[in-house]
Image (tube, rainbow, N blue to C red):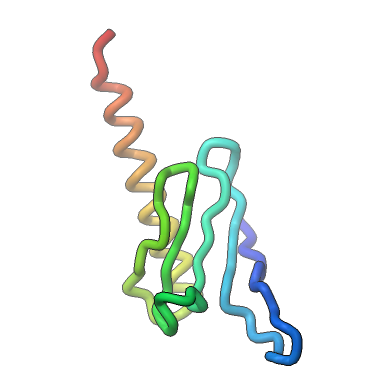
Length: 90
């Protein structure tokens, strides 16, 4: 998996990467981590819209920690969905 810088840069404000994303596949889609959210300045948060994860604060203090934590959260959510499907009765 390769995380890429998807930071939206404003003119004249420098180019400091603060938002990273990775495409996982058609089901999970894209996972995004950022420390530049307008309501969470200085706090890492994540998004993964196909799995209904929106603006979830993370405990991470670095980009790498945020990426790893986001992956763990998405894996747990995907496993929970699979468990529900496995246990579902027709």
